[in-house]
Length: 350
Image 1: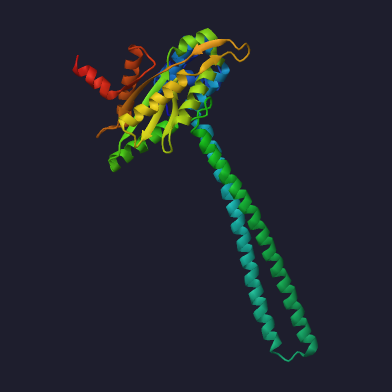
Image 2 (image 1 turned 45 degrees about the vertical axis):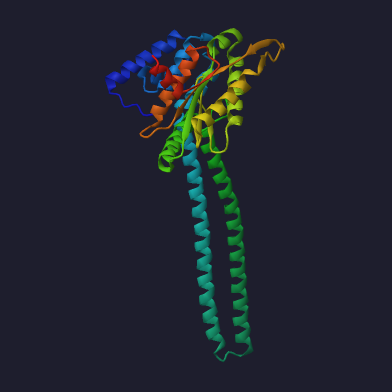
C-alpha cells in the first residue's frame, strides 16, 4: 500500500492514528501504527470497515486480530521479501552451476590440447620409454577428466535438488500471499485478481459470469453474545462450506470481516442462484455448539446478493450490484438469496 501524503498531512494522520490507538488501548507497535494510520487516511476502505466493526466490540481488539488485519491488507512487503530472498538463492545456485560447467569445459579443452600434443609425440621416434611416458601422461589426463566430469555430475544433481526446493518454497510463499490467514480460503487480493480475469474472459468469450456477495446475519450480535473466538469458528465454518460448494474454475474468497464473495465464471443467474441456495441451506442446517459445554448456540444464516456480468462492467460495478442484492435481502427478512433481476423488478413496480 502506497501512502504519498505531504509532510503536514502525514503528521496530522500520524497524530490521529496515535490518538485513536491510545483511546482504544492499542499497543503502539509498528504494525498497529500502520493499521491505524491506514484507517485514518481512509485509503483502505475494507481495512477501515473491519476496524470500525472492532471498535463496536472492544474485547475483539486482540493482538491476534490486529495481526490478521495487518497481514491481510498491509503485509505485502513480507511476501515480497520472501520472494526476493528465494530468487536471490536461486540466482546464486545457478551461478554456481554455471561456474562448475565453465570449469569442466576448461578441463575438457585442456584434455583436448594435451591429447593432441601427446599424439604428436607418439609420431616421433622416442623408443619404448618415450611411448610409455606419453601413454602414462594420457592415462593421467583421462583420469583427471573423468574426475572432473564426476564432480560436475554430482554438483548438477545437488543443484537440481536445491532449485526444485527453492521453486517449491516460492510457490508456497505465493500461495500464502493469496490465502486468508483465518479461514484458509482465498483472500481479498486473490478475489480482486480473479474478478478482473473472469470479467475479461466473459467479455471476450461471450459466456455468462456471476458474482455473489454474502455475509453472516446478526454476526455482530453473535460475537457479542458468545465471544470473538466462537465468532472465528463460525467464519471458518462458513468459509469451508463456501469452498466445498464451488465447482472447478469458481472461487470462494473472504472479502473482508464476515463478508465473502463467490466468483462463478460460466454461470447464468439461474446457475448462481442454485449454488447460493445450496450454500445458504447448508449453513442454516448447522447447529452451533459450545465446544467446552456442548451448549447449543443456535443456527446461523446467510444473506446473499447475485449480479450478472454485463457489457461495460468492471469489478466495482458487479460488487456494487451484488451488494445491493445482499442489503435488500437483509432489509427484507435475511436468510435469502436476491438476484439483481429481483431488484430491477422491485424498482419497476415502485
